[in-house]
Image 1 (cartoon, rainbow, N blue to C red):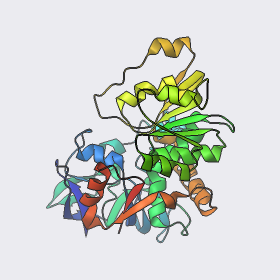
Image 2 (image 1 turned 180 degrees about the horizontal axis):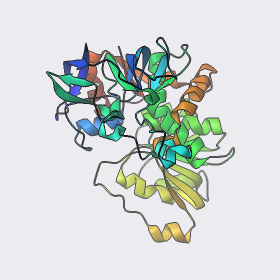
Image 3 (image 1 turned 90 degrees about the horizontal axis):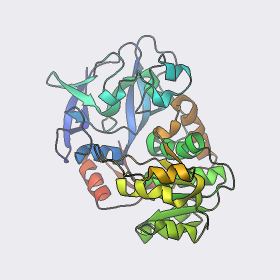
Length: 363
């Protein structure tokens, strides 16, 4: 048993820095010393009461670090490997996994914040503590399933690697895996936060043109240009008209990266007949978006839900890492703030205040 410091959610939006007991890795598990953890909007959804989670919970799901110990039966990782964690580990045996569609695995228990055997590796005074999405990366060390840790080159900095594990994989994957955008196709991205900027980077990689970023602040739109947006517009109720000033028939693709029912409902109006609207941002529970189904059908438009960007971590994390090392995916430029674990609440306050780019906890 090891004692680690971690950011624990107990039902309040303010996290407590607690000492947590971490057991040794069991069969098929590995212990990872965390180098960095992203501060993601999905974590904030939990803290702000938008999503229900078991408590107490060690927050964080965007994590990267070094393997310190391996349990019996582990074959894909060794002590000293640098790894990125995936917040949705695949079971490997369900029909989706057998088809290579691990992002819709039906056997994973990560959304229950449980390891494959139904256990949690963490406790406080012998009481169960749940690692968020079976990762809990806002901690000095974690024990995760072998399939939840993917080896990447050691040259990738931990803060960059952490973001690859969620926002980068989600945004780039929505473009290349789910929408399968081809060169020369036009796209609008609603919301230029961390995931929105990742989508823009994915569109630039795919050769899309024009790439239109829509947001409500000049700061966000200027940032979007740095990541590949060719045009920017202010987001509002007249967004479809503003998009058509650039592409008269509407865009081929639209991506919603905020998770607001209002902008999800607005998104299909920005695409042309036969175009595709992609939901990437995750809204609060029990907040449906009103969609004009008749217009979708009459105009032959597609509405696509993107879960984790259709990511296969074992395949995609190393690829994204290589793109970063080759200078084609400037993930490091997304990072605008770095915090110590003790300052995690300050990082979330900054997010709530509308800070652009991404914050990362550096251990």
